[in-house]
Image (tube, rainbow, N blue to C red; front, side, top):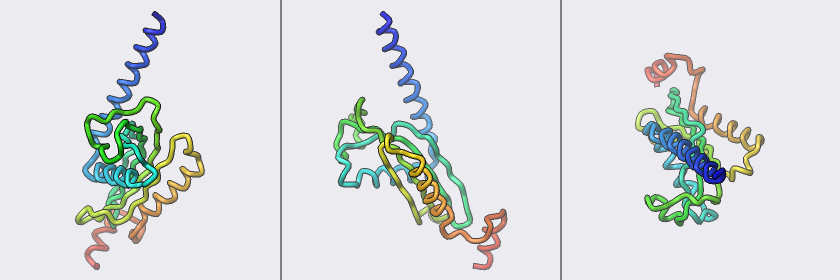
Length: 166
């Protein structure tokens, strides 16, 4: 009876976490969704990746407007599915219980006028291999993406001033 109760509790907890994480994914802005789609395509284009992966959880999602464009940063975990990477978008693909879990960090800068991608950084690694040094590198790389093509000190009004004389 104890094992049955423990199994029920574990199942209910996993369901609640999955529902909360799914709600976070549904709240992505258009640019954040564009960045997520680009990151997934980039990850699955690697020859080392054979299986499809689905987003398991979203740890960070930010979007900030700067004078040279909109900066988007995402950090999330992927989980291996039972489908090959070419079929990863099928609804029938299920997450493999003991499959690999990948942590991805992605930073994008989209042009302000037309929302075209101007610069990006994507890094995906097994969750077990994520260490402080790698996180520091990710932060440094994302700062470079964020600062790309920026001029001045980014005070309010800098964009209007720079646009009127450019």
